[in-house]
Image (cartoon, rainbow, N blue to C red):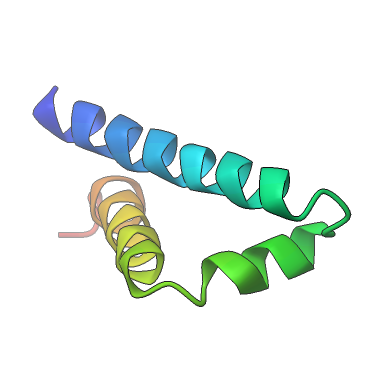
Length: 64
């Protein structure tokens, strides 16, 4: 249950960051928005943590 809350918190943080960037750059495409987000180190670490959690709990969980 705690891991689901952690993943939800990461997802909400990324959605919030996307909304902030989208407000500053309303004409940005999805790829441009992703490029802008990836310029920040904290966002890169959050995305890495979300992918790690997803991979550990869903993709590698049945094989280990």
